[in-house]
Length: 249
Length: 199
Length: 189
Image (cartoon, rainbow over all chains, first blue to last red; front, side, top):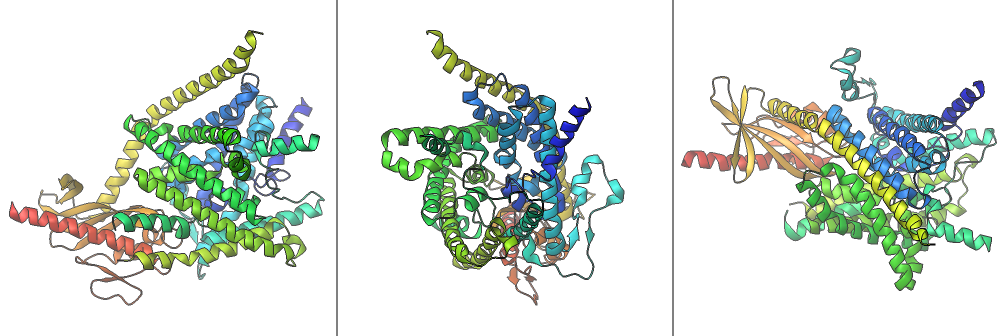
């Protein structure tokens, strides 16, 4: 019993640091760069992706013995796309301001490699509870990385913190937290470049350097993009498969 | 702004001011992953243009049908499945009948299925309410924009190989900061497009 | 031997089909549950924008001219105070939608941006910075954009977002085109 709890905790915490999807596995870079212009958007995106991740992990893990190996990728895509569309409809209905802020990036959670990656790497091999916890950990890790990016970019690029917080808080009713709608840093001229696309790449680069520094200290390998090797779809990709076959021969 | 000038405006904004990679952050994975050599960058980009055009052609009428039946909410799921199936089909056909083209582009095709630039361009076309022709032009522009960004960036990266970079920044951080500077250069195009098409 | 193709081809296809069917059913259910709420939210937002672009009006009445929808702004006693136009123009990041309120004297009463997809911190300021939209109040047809020191019928562009400023101005001028069409129609009939 204690063992089980311990391992579940491990599944959860690995997504935060050791296997942080953004900073260590370099997955989901597109939304990380695109929606980190404001902290409120980053949290909204992170929560939406986490919900999809947990739900799809649970369903895929529950169906892991039913889905034939041959059609598993299309089956995963169908499951993930359904959850994404459901989340999208709920956001449209209850948090319309977030829907217009995230725009096309909300339906694009479908092709966020973190989700398909976890389905392929974890959920189809592990029991339901562990998969749910894994999804939760990865989702929180993704949200944390997004949050860090957004904190720096919004603070330096717009001179605000939690700007437009009521857009999210509206879900819980009007004027929650005393109508808190973000703070503006006084006497500070924002460096607009930080919320422009170039600022996104720059902040991500610096954050990555920081993650590398920590990795070096802990003697872990650095986060690196190796062409297709890290891609969660590599199992089905003919290029990688043929390369593997070449190696075998 | 009508007819030809509007068409030109769509293509130019998609290539320059709203560049998919450097301004909209779509397709970052191949941008960082496959841009090390100029010829692989070229192959990947041509495959992306091809798939973007094809999936736009395949999904536009279908979306029209879904919308007319009040099934707009199935858009995402239908589009991603069509794109995935289409890419697989093209790969199989190329492999069997057009071997030379397969050798040049085929290996990149499966990578593109879950490339957000492809699904992104399809969904953006719907959002903007483009006609069939305009959708194709926007997809072409988006694809060419991807090609331009990839080619420029692969050039930048080949210089990076020989540069003396601080230990901590080596690898991905240096690549990202180089991408940041490439992105700055694309910001300048806003005025250019505005200047050409201003009334 | 006979069972092999069945097991290898038909079973996976069937499972995939069932998953697809189930997911579609789930989506249809969610759609049914959220459809009314989404429509209500959209209508509420549109009504709020309408009211904000013509604060003096007590009620609005839908109307149409040449296929373009607009709203008549009516006072509490039912007199016509002016019109609100819902205009769409192209901006830096795609479509930009605007509600423009114009009084019967032919002056802008208020402008509200409903849809904008521009760069945060630059073009987005058009929506978030109240001082920008306030410039349009009391302007007449043929508004032009200037970079600083605007006078008369000119407005100051947002620093670094000339394209967005021009797009909003274009929307206001489009609204004036519709306005003059309605005016002509009214005086003729």
